[in-house]
Amino acid sequence: MNAPLTLLGTLHVLRPWWLLGLVVLPVLAVWLRRAERRGDAWQEAVDPHLLPHLLEGATGARRAWAEWLGLLGLALALLALAGPSTGKRAQPLWQSRQPLVVALDLSSAMLARDLPPSRLVQARAKLATLLRERSGGEVALVVFAQDAYTVAPLTDDAANVALFLDALSPDVMPADGQQPARAIAWSQRLLQQAGFAYGDILLLTDHADAAALAAAAQAHAAGYAVSALGVGRAQGGVFAGTGGLAQARLDAASLQALAAAGGGRYQAITADDTDLRALGVLQPRSAEGLASGQAAQIWRDDGYWLLPLVLLCVLPLFRRGVLALLLVVAAVGSAPPATAQAALPPPVAAQAPRGTLWQRADQVAYARRLQGVAAYRRGDYAAAIAHFSGLPDADSQYDLGNALAQAGRYDEAIAAYDRALRLRPGMPDAIYNRKRVEEARQRTSPPPSASSSSGNAAPPRAGSGQPPPGQAAKKGGDESRTDAAGRGGVPPSPSARNRPGAQTAAGRPPDDARPSPSQPSPEQARAQARADAALRSRMQQALQGRPAGAAPVQGAPAPRAETAEERERRLANQAWLQRVPDDPGALLRARLQLEARHRAEAGGP
Image 1 (cartoon, rainbow, N blue to C red):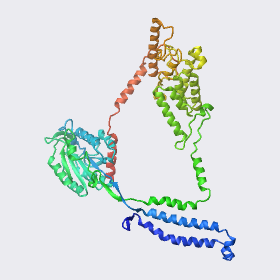
Image 2 (cartoon, rainbow, N blue to C red):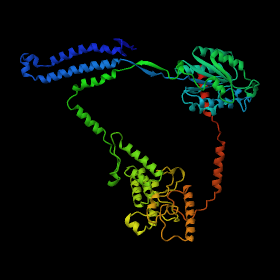
Image 3 (tube, rainbow, N blue to C red):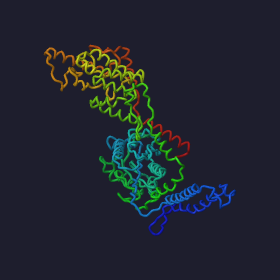
Image 4 (cartoon, rainbow, N blue to C red):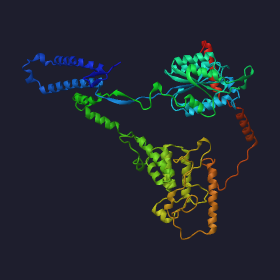
C-alpha cells in the first residue's frame, strides 16, 4: 500500500513507488543510443570524417530531438503518476447509516386478541409504519417460530420489504414454536454476511428465554445492538395453538433483560409511532459516530498539471499526417446514419431530420416527435404538422395525417395515411382514418372561393352521422390504439375557423367567425341541435366498443339480448373465479418449507 512521501517540507508524493521508474530512464537512453548506432550500416563502411559530408544531418538531428523529447515526456508522466501534491483539500466524509434487521414472531401466539383485532395485525401495521417513516439505512426482514427464516435480505429499498407484509401469518411457517434465540443468531448472521461490523436487531415478540438472552449478549459482543418491541398485553389473550386453546402474555421483564444484554432498548407497542421513536429505529444512527457535515483534510493530487507538458513532449513522435487522418476519421464518424426514406416523396424526404455533432438522426426525430405530440395535445395543429412533417416512420406519418385532417387539409391527410401504409402495410388505424377522411372529403362541397384559393375541403356538416375527420373510433379488446395525443379520439379542428362558412364538428359556428348574411331560422336551429345530440350519442357509443372499420349508422342499434348459452357460460366463469383461493402467502409458505427441507437434509441451519 502506497504511503505519502514528504519532500522539502511542502511537496508530498502520494504514490512514491512510481519514482523508481526514473531510475530506468538513463538505462533506456543508453540502450536507444546503442541501438541507433548498430542500425546505421554506414558507420562501418565509411570513415567517420566523411560521414557528415555524405549523410543528411538534419534528419538525424530531428530524430535525436524527438527521442530526447520522448524520454522527457516519459519522465514527466512518471512524475504525474507519482501524485505530487502541494496542499490539502476538504473531503466530505460519507455518512453511512446503521443497518436494521427486524425479526418478527410468527408463532401461533401472534393470533392472540389482547391487541385488537389481533397481535399479528398490530405488528404488521407497526412494520408498515417503520418501513414508511425510516430515513435511510438498509433494512432486512426475518420471521421466526420454531426456526428463523429470511423474508427480505438487507436492502435500502424499504418499499420492496413492505411488499411481503400482507403475506405474513403463522400458517406460512414450516413449524410452530417460539425460538427468539434463533432469530437473533440468524439476524446476526445476515449482518455479518453483508459485511457490516455494526447494526441493529429489533425483535418483535412477547417474551425472551435464557437462550435468547445469551444470543443477545453474543450479538452485542460482536458489535450489534439488540432491541425488543413488546407485542401484547400483560393480561394476555387466548389463541388456538397446535395443542388446543392457549394463553399468551406479554413478559416485559424478560424483554427488558434481553435489551440490556444486547445493548439495545425496550418499548411496549403503542398505537402511534412513539415506541419506534423511543427505540431509535426511525432515525438510524450514523456509523462510527461521524457527525453531520464532518469533513476530512486530504492531500490534493496535482499530477494532472503535468499532462499538457507530456502531450507537448510526445507530439513530435507522431508520424506526418496522423493528426490530419484523425480529423478525417472524426468527421466521418460524426456523419449521420442513413435512414430509410425510400417510401417518402422528395419534398417530404427533404424535411427528414439529420444528425448533428451532438445527436444522431433518430434522436433528432424523436425530439421532433415529442414536440409534435405536445402541440397536438394543446390543439396547435399547425405546429404539430410542422413537427411531424418529414419524420420517416409510419407512426409519425399517421399522426401527421391526423393533424392534417384536424386542420381540414383532407387531400394531404390522405396522402400522409398512404405513406404510413406504404411504410407499414395493413396498419388498421391508418386504414380506418383514411376511409373516414375520404368520406368526409366526398361528402363536403366547399364554396367556390374556398376551392379556388386553398384547394382544401371544408369540415363535414353537423348531423351527417359522421364524427370529425381523423377521429378513429376506439377498437374493442386489446387492439385499441391511441393517436399522437394519447387519446382514442381527436378534438375538432380549430383551424376550420379560418375558412369561410366553416363549422366545428359539433355544428356550431366558430367563436371568431363573423355571422353570415342569412341567419338560420328557429326551426333550423332546433334541427341542428337535435343533429348535434344524435352525433354526440353515436360518437360515445363508437368510443365504447364499436368495432374498427364498421360502417357508421344513422341510428344507435339496440343492445343484443344475451342468449341462454352465453349467460350460462358467463355464470360458470364467475363461479370458477370465485373458487380461486385468495392466498397471498402461498409463495412465501412454499419458499420457507423448501428452505426448512434443505436445512433438515443438511443437518441444521
